[in-house]
Image (tube, rainbow, N blue to C red; front, side, top):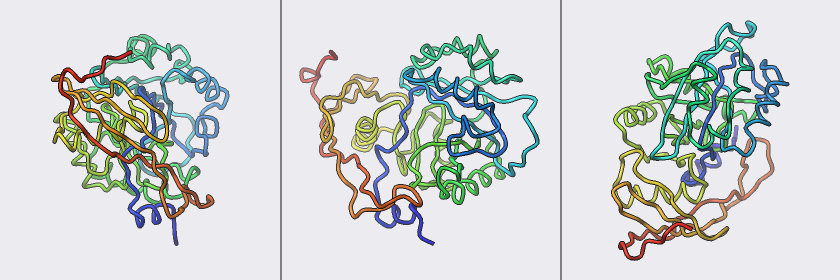
Length: 314
């Protein structure tokens, strides 16, 4: 049976510059079945889901539901739920966790502060604190969004959990169904596509050591898509694998061409030219959707700048 992932893999569609965009992620545990729009079509109170969507709008916070891998029979609301917040912008990367008996407590959060990278509202409202366990491996498994996410994502999540990956969770939506199984790793916020269990374990070990694995990487969710592609290109050109040292400090231009400035914590700066291309031949962007030509981020040039040529931010 042909699927959107089959077509994307067969056509060798590039992954760079395809990650969801969010500087801050807010994750709420919600067992049981999920609908296509999980915040309002799961066993979470839909009124609460709508209120959370409204509270997070235009703040830079992206909310998703998570659940432990395994069967998802409906046993009613859990007595306690895990909640996580993570900020992914380099220089201020953090992951905090909490437990709540009442998910309505999330409405007390200052979403604007969270989006700017301030964890104090999370800790004060939920009794949270820095996460000290393994990094989180969030695998998209929402078959109501796309069947590939269930067919490919759920076995991956189950394999990770069975092999002892404590940070393995299923998540409602990461975008890019045709790249399933898709994965987001926190705290650094790098997304991956066409993931396999052995590669995920390498990725997680890299996170523990403060490294970024670029193979199969879609980009860092802290940046818009041209910046995601540019940052990965600099990592490749400079052979830089250390996490939390590269930042997208400026993006000039607009579709279909951008000039992205990427800065290293040690003072080095690169100018990266990114062009928006068209993926041909047409292919389904999601199972059951009409054939389309999704945009792709093509890196045209990567140039390290001498100090005198470094542009100052506006």
